Image (cartoon, rainbow, N blue to C red; front, side, top):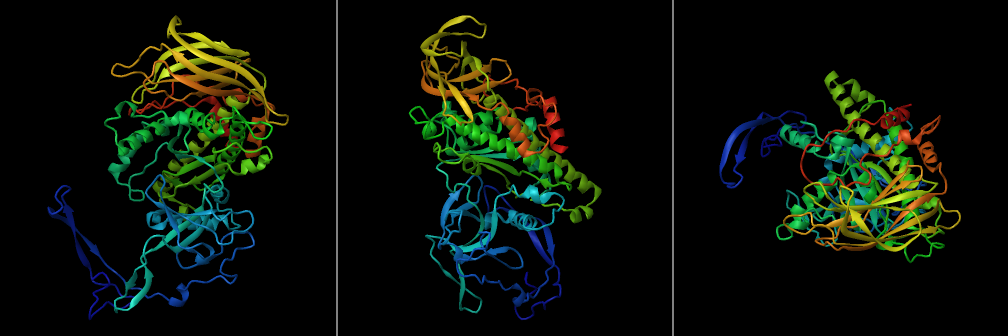
Length: 633
């Protein structure tokens, strides 16, 4: 009936059918057999003939595994999407599973990868779970490849993931079954074929990809926008206010390749007998969403354990973990400054609701010193993505909008732009205080807290020690009133110079060995201690912090962890990063410590408690206001 009657009297092409009245049926949640008609939907259809010659796919003339001169995948166009030549890839394709959301991914291998690319350069994303993104990707591809600046969008969209088009390929392990046409003859369509978005494979060339998914904007939902109901948008709005979205304009939604310190922060560690995989995933997500920018950066740059632990490394042959994290953060600061600048150059406001920024690098191994610095920088990721609830607004589209719609776009673009600017500012501030000290570290405060997932972490004791050569030493901890207790902490401190030509002169190595006789801060169980290392520079301007892993149910924990306090070789390294990202960003009589002051929470307990309460919105720091002004200049 939807085809216009069918049977003996079908509606002819080009003519509307009669009204078709369809019932709207309610089904009971528990008893699906219980139904009730709650209304009707009236539908009118039109049968349209398609010109088969115009819709025919154009084929490449450069051979089965052709690539263009630029080395990109040769694409063929039809009336809806950019088609990728299937002969460029090995067939069939292998399912990899689901990453983060609900869309399965597939491994793609180039048959003859061009120079500068590996066979794993691309990955496939199931189009059936990404239909809400395909139009955005196609518009983005058109703008990026054009000579038209399109209201500043071209430079902005170059930060998006590389998109090559849509590939149709059979899935490995799924038996092909020919589908029958109406006449009974066997059709050519095969049920094992998948349509895949061909995107850049972020894991290509990585030992272990450490990747942050940072959702941008103070508000991440809009009622009536791309299928979002009012009630869903309201609930999302309440949730936004319990997360860092409301505080800093962005929040952490995903964290791949987590350091051991974060892995041990199990939000349900005291509920081992009750937790399920589903409840753990939900609680872990809440833990991430509550982190502020300072804590996100702390975990993101943590390389002191695992394959990047460098206690036994020959530093004449490989980079130290402190050097790697400094280089990664320097590159991220540069690119986020550029992203903030091009964001300010977009002249038509966009509505990118729930869109994200990806920050990533390879945390699986220490790179050899033979590897050029630029080669390491090229592996760092700073990208924008997740277009399921986004539109690409242009001058032409804007002119056809009502005043209310234009105001709505301006409001949400303000949310997005504010999140981008704040993320860049937070990253620059992290770099300044972590890697900007070219003089000396004065003292280290060692504080032990009890990790509590559902409330603020409890203070257990602390001690302040000078930064000087110190063999293994046991010191007493003070309570929150400054009085000595029976609790002790064992540590050592030594300076390690780095090879000539390094971006760092050297590092002070703080070894947190163990603690004894810690007070129990939990009523129903035993405390879960971790140690916060906070260092102050000799001039009091720089503040470095890092944490150890959490030791579960132990008042006499043994850590044996080494944390590095870096000393910069170039005091102006941050200014160079800012200037490379945005010309003029560091010019004039710039006081970096006014622009990027120490945060009030440095060295205190972590803020990742998963308690669901409305977070207080912090007032804008004068330094951040100046940062935004310089980006917009």
